Every structure is written in C-alpha cells, then in structure tokens.
Length: 247
Image (cartoon, rainbow, N blue to C red; front, side):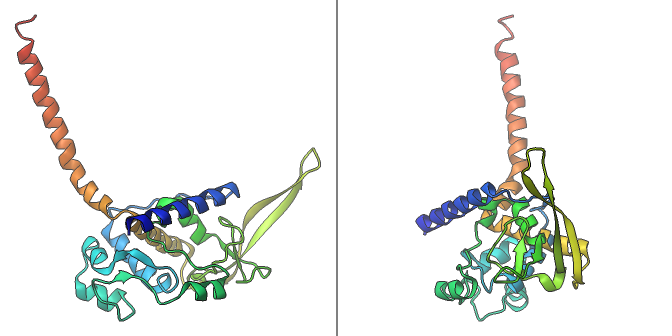
C-alpha cells in the first residue's frame, strides 16, 4: 500500500512539472482554510456529488473522513455517500481504467494526494478556468491546463463561458497570444462569487485529503509552542542560577 501511495505521488508530481512547463495560468490565490470544518464539509459534499463518480480516493476511507470532519456515521452515509458502500470502505468508484480511457481518452487519476502534487492554487484556478472550445473532443478547454481531457463537470453551476484572446506582434516580428478575459454565453446556477466559494471549499477538502494528519498536527501546535516557551523560560532561570557565582 505504501509503495503504491509513493508511486501515485511521484506520478502526480511528474504530471505537475509537465504542466508547469507548459505555462499554467494561475490568476487567483485559492485562500483555503483547512481549519474551517464547515468548509471541509461543504467541499466533501461537492466531491461526493460531482467528482467521485470518476475520481477515486482509494487512500481515504469514509469513516476517517467523517471523524475528521465532525460527521456522524448516519450523516456521512445518508447525506454524502450516494452508493451502497459501507462506512469503513475506501472511497472508490466502479469505473474501470479501460472505461475511463474509452470515454475520456485517459483514465481519470485518483485524487487522494492531488493537492500535494499540484498545489491548492493550481487546483483552484483549474476548476474556475474552463471555457467552451468546439475543437476539443469534450467541447471544453482550460486556461490553467490547456487541452486537458477532463470535461467541465461543474458547468451547470458556473455556466458556459468563452475565452477571449488577442494576438500581438513584437518588434522582432514574433506573434504572441494573450488571454484577455472570459465572456459569459450562458449563466450558471450560481453567481460568480458563489461558484468560486464552492470551488474553494472543494479544493480545501482535497488539501485535507492529501494529508489528513495535518488537522491533528495543527491541534497540537499551540501546546507545542507553549511547551517550548515554558522550557525556554526554565532554561533561562537555570542559566541565571548557574552563572550567578561566575560573575
């Protein structure tokens, strides 16, 4: 299991480097807050409803997520889990690798540690920067990850947008294409800010999933700092007492 997890992280990191080499567009910071339990709960709900059908989280279990997010077993299984999975099951789906390759051209990756590989800012911008593109097989393209095979699964919430580009010629005669903005073709169910808030919560949940232990680590942080401060004070008193006769 550990070897498989390490291999997954390495593959995602390599994909991240390849994407960065292509000049990913990062226009806004994610500004996530992993300490917000409400945000994590809303992000988990969005993930269960829109992402889990294609993207598994096979290194996470429903019961662990429920415990960390302050949910009871009934709340988790009746409100968030849309399959006949058991409370202790891993967060997997029924889509096979072959089906994923047939439908999307590439099997959708597991997203357990995607936030570690890509970073929260990249994920946030990827999910808000889809635009319609008839030249692509899915009908969609992405400003942050150009020519991505993933369709815009949240389009009903965000709406349909068209990207506007301008081409400029520099003094050397070379042409450069520059993104200038989006134009809304069809409004979505959510306002622009409400959609960004939904994506921010989703990315926050992905950040938590990549390292659930960070919630525990953060809860210990004040006590660790208190211990360090107390130890420093005691060490100072010891130093004063020890060197009292020296001076």
